[in-house]
Length: 318
Ligand code: TXA
Ligand code: MG
Image 1 (tube, rainbow, N blue to C red):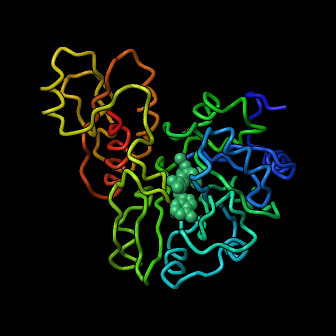
Image 2: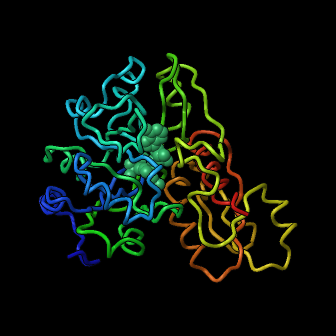
């Protein structure tokens, strides 16, 4: 029943597939998601199968309205309320105590659930037309680079999907920032498309979990994740270049290639543009005929922090 040709901007068709327990790729402002009915265990199982995702890696539940929130979480602290008011719909996921109706499959047996309201008009329409929320991880095979265009989704998961809802290229280009609320504070568990500065402006000082290699509750924090197939080295540009003289490399730099081969994330130094370009450029470099990718560290501010986090994880395998 599934076939790669099945994409378009038909929200009703997407809704029909989802009502029948199907898998539909959905556009969001961050990356494309691989969506299914979060209240249907068979549908949720199909997500894990399609992605090759281990069952210990919980899914984010996507909602289209605040009313729906109460079907997903059992409590909503004041700081979450303030953050939702400021940034939902948007690239921010909350980890909160789950409602009984959310199955252990979605949360990998955890008592908490990840929930967010994505900022994309087609997906909001879709979510508002359905009587259930959607569980959706990023629409890529487990461990690989997240998709920011329909072509990325088709290339890797097209034959496993019932429909791809085409919402164009993702506006932010990095996965959502994930936050938890323990002991009255706010913890950033995964850096992402909403900057730490923006979160602190609303919630006050937050803690940022370091890129753990072993935290079993957040595999998005595993050190080898978001990785291309080719070896990628990450660091300061001068040392990367001096260590690889004469090698068949391509560079991924923030602003300027200095005459070397590769890709520029943002010639004007715009960090949001750099974030938007990151995953597409990584894929292009991965598909090029170089034998190694050398990625420059970008300034550690705004979304630059999340960009460095992803590049660091993409490299840490070697
Ligand atoms: O922007 C995004 O967040 C995208 C779009 C599609 O919404 N989704 C996404 O999902 O990046 P995924 O599954 O690729 O990453 C979700 C991360 C995983 O690393 C998972 O471990 C973590 O969220 N997560 C989900 N539920 C959790 C929970 N209850 N406790 C801790 N971590 C959780
Ligand atoms: Mg992912």
